[in-house]
Length: 460
Ligand code: ZN
Image (cartoon, rainbow, N blue to C red; front, side, top):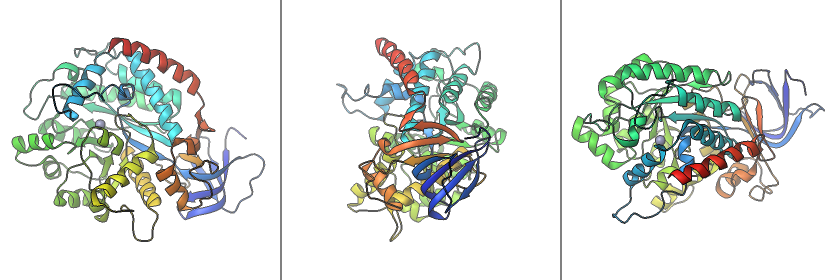
């Protein structure tokens, strides 16, 4: 295989024209799809797979939380556990992490993302400073660490440095673990510039965007100033995840958080509204009409007890969504889509909810998440078409969940019966990083992660 041009031959491939047979995909030296030709011959100089699909973008991740999995599931003696009690555990946890920890956890989380079938990730990166809030000698130290982890693993990174300036809508000061997040507007702009530089150093497909943490954490003036200053980049925000958060905004601003956002900021296609769990029917219509992407994180939302997103009404209104692994307690794009669909079935006492009549549920979920994820990351990907980054996965048709299935049923099999074991190969912008289900550097990255985790758990 020549260095300049790589080729993949797929017996079946999901192209913009649907499933096609004997597809030759040529990838240029930068990692973009140069051509897609169905009904081709395999030839001698090609990598052959059975079933090739575009890969999803993971539109929302906090990688450091991967190392917290299993540490927040004991019932507290104080009474009712909630998102807010979990957040206290999370704040204490992040307060013991050093830059080496953060890089090692990020690298291993990126390996798991790639092995499970994501080829890119939007890292919503909010731990910026030392414990207590003192900046590192390099303001962008921890952005550099995330970028280094992306570089080591080959994942397609969109780095989203998070703006976080206050402890609540009333403007209260940051406290405890939050001190590591905080920046005033001017320092945030400097940090964002450092993060953009770090992201751009990873590889040509890496990107950058801006993420005000939430309406709680950034006041109206700064939110509007950020939107102006960084026009043209992806713009992500947590919103309407928890009822108390909506009530807090209602008490201070006189409106529910989503309605307030839609009335005060120009929410459009560069926006990604993370969670959007609790929306009124009117808010659902307005978000769907805004061209923004809703960032659903169904596994984390279930783990944190957020509530159930009304996917049925939102999709019927033509809304866009993608999925994110968020807390990374489990990392699996197929499981996110399964959890999303199952939440609707359980609520509505129904089956096959998030698709149109006669259409495969898996196919609709996958197509929607492909488009939404790519848009949210500002990444030219999401389909097997010339000019797009070659973000691709191959499914192993010998996997028990996929045996005997073809066409859209492969997606139904993978999403409803399968998992990461069904993913044999992953390419991110043409980088062939997963082969036979394993990341090329899994052994070394896991070894480092295991050692760091042992040390972290001694400090918890
Ligand atoms: Zn989040």
